[in-house]
Length: 242
Image: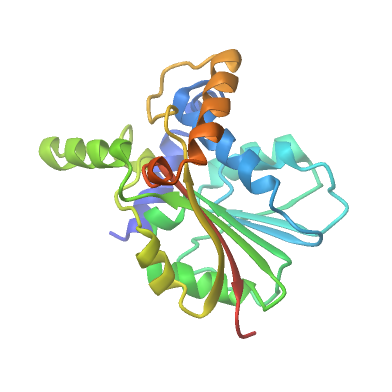
């Protein structure tokens, strides 16, 4: 059974609880924090969102007067996303590891997907979507994050990889050097880590607490040594050759 098929089954299974998990809990607030980071880095023009989930990223977009394509493997999550955004965005149900798109986009974004798919297939997809004018923004897992290391130990020791755990949590992370090797044909504009006090817990996190955690996260992200420990790795790229 392919990993992408496992992902489809897993996310369809948790689709009914996804809204709460991704908006009200610690793990959801971490994702929303990354959404805000990514939205600030967008340039003008078209957008493709690879692994859109329930489409919540687009809460951060004010200008819908552009072509936007959002893709996810879960048909149930895409149904939720369509209800939220009506006809402003084109949504597709596709397996990202097999998805082929001929159109080039001004912005390619992918949040919390790279650590769940085949890395070579992911790079090929990014390559197909982009040219040397495209801005590529990726969020994935930092292999040196204490939270990531802990969750991997729990997975390995207890063999917990089920729908309620493994499918929602990274099974691999990346170092800066690994990112540079994977995207050797790209110009690395920025690699940074963030997310220290937010965590993977599916427990409720209030808006006020999230605001406090986000402010502290922003402050300590500026400290070089601490920056290496952030759970989420934010990567900004541009292709060298079209």
